Length: 97
Image (cartoon, rainbow, N blue to C red; front, side):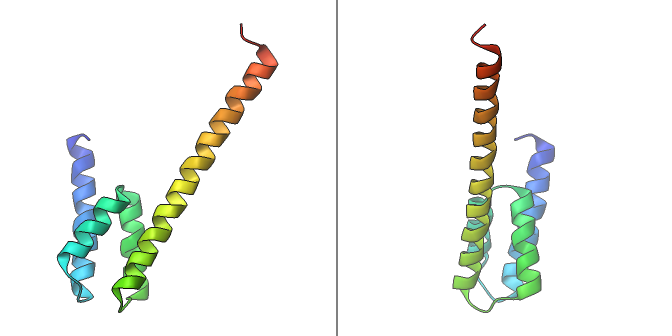
């Protein structure tokens, strides 16, 4: 991860942790969620959920984190499948040469 990416990740993480603390939950929960989600885009999505819904239960927060993670994984699987299909179709069209 280059320094610009690291700065963007830290900013997203800090926003998430601030919102978690504002809602009355421990900072460690925000750290754990940021590490689990991984990307600034998914962390920002989680922060937006917290700002909009303002959940009062840790389970709701964790459930949303798991839902975001599952959607990201499904997207990755779909993209991998599309790439495999494209390679297979190219093989059928052009052969091995």
